[in-house]
Image (cartoon, rainbow, N blue to C red; front, top):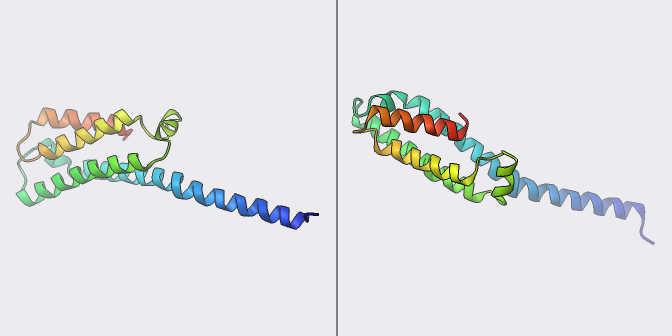
Length: 136
């Protein structure tokens, strides 16, 4: 005969394993995505003067911003790819649809490419599109 303690121990053990798995493979990747989203928001503010005035600042700051936006694009794509059953979380609006992540990645790369010699209107359009897609 199985004791009640053994049954309860098994349930708590299984629950603990389930909790660990969901934390490790679902919650942490979504949290990483949200951290990258925050970094993108910070970088849009930090480099707003370069976006609005391409080519006007010193080349070191421009290179720093280019690297930041390109890195954000890579990190965003990698974080989205790391989230299991992405389409499910997208349906619940926890993360944006994958097409929007790809579009955000393109906008970040576009901003990176246009900080040295870009068009102010295009930069503003890319920034606004990015903010809309990312919900910033």
